[in-house]
Amino acid sequence: MKYKHNISGHLMILPCYVIYLFFVLLPVLMTVWFSFRDYDLFTQSNFVGIDNFTRLFTDPLFLVSVKNTFIYALGTIIPQILLGLLLAVLLNTNIPGRGFFRLAFYIPYLVSMVSVAMLWLWIYDPASGVLNRFVKFIGLPPQRWLFDMKLALSSLMVMGVWKMSGYNMIIYLAGLQQIPPQLYEAADIDGISGFRKFLHITIPLIQPTTFFLVVINTIQSFAVFEQVNIMTDGGPSNATTTIVHQMYERGFVDFQMGYASSMGVFLLLITILLTVFNFKYGREGQDLS
Image (tube, rainbow, N blue to C red):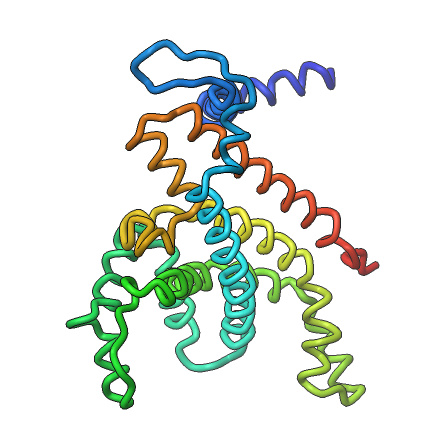
């Protein structure tokens, strides 16, 4: 009877299995297969062994993209999680207009990256951008935000933090509202200050939420592409090119699909490694029983 029940359940979600097979599992397997071949979309592919992978570590442009990807990830993951937590704590109180502010901070995450990129292109515009107008207003020299090698990647990171913080805020709000209010009431009776309550009650009880957000933000930061392709196209002088941007350039501009696939496999392995690391160490101390 139990076996028949399981069969009916799997049949009901069969469309999900089919979608996952054709749009996730099959592309991943094909990427791994192409990574060991020399393929240009137009001629028959040839098996080249690990040549594509050895080429990765001698390709200066790819090494620059790896460095930029790690810098982008390190510069966005922690700030957008901390900002999301700060916003969630503030908007979990009974301040006036908190519904409006929750929506206002969450909207950037709902807007497509193309629209967000076009908005920030205007903000960063050296001649008429609102950011340079503000910089001039406070007496500082205007900057070429996306055209200066020292500022371009940081400018993209600021935009990434701005877009993801609202999503982190919503997830943290859900986590904060699961904390039993009796814990805070008991702390009030004991005369514990607000900061100590946050440190010893809030932080430990939202640790599973933090773990989830670290995993999600890590995956998204290492897969950064749209804003790079739209706003800088990897420039100036490859200062903002990332692993996914190089995959796009090698695969769909130079038609080196085998080499681009090896980059994809490299990124997949890094993502799996970081996710396993997060699962191994991020869950420590979550047993609060």
